[in-house]
Length: 115
Image (cartoon, rainbow, N blue to C red; front, top):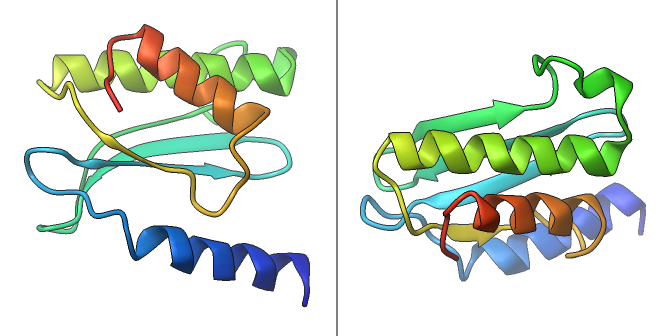
């Protein structure tokens, strides 16, 4: 089983238990080798409510990837608060909960999101 297939299998297992609603949307995280992305999704309507990534952040390309994740977590938390969202369901998207994923989640919590 390849790394991609393994992650897809884990992702299916995680996603069958997680569903974002209008009241409690889903915070989905994707990480590539260079960048990290986060978006808050309402699965009942299939719309993205808030998104943030290290792609267009000022200075994100000059810092370590853990700091990029912290910046994205803080940004997504602040945007969610501005949109009136306080509680979300965290979707780690098949990734292990450590490193950049954990850093993003901790920063989002510090910015005021609850999950």
